[in-house]
Length: 64
Image 1 (cartoon, one colour):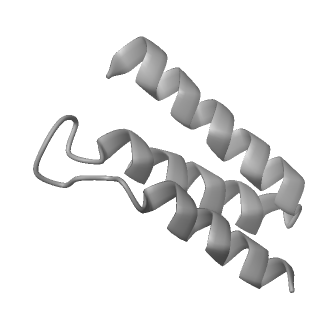
Image 2: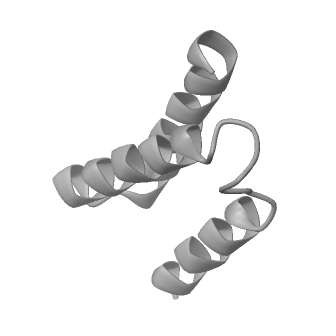
């Protein structure tokens, strides 16, 4: 069940991402990599989601 929730979050978050306009999905890709790395490292879904969200917000606000 947790895997299904995780997959639904990914689909919901990436549904409006355009590869041809704006930042070309670079912040989203970096946040996904960070989320996956956190999940493989600690195996805690809440930490993975919170870390990926924080990384995305920082990337969008400070860099892109």
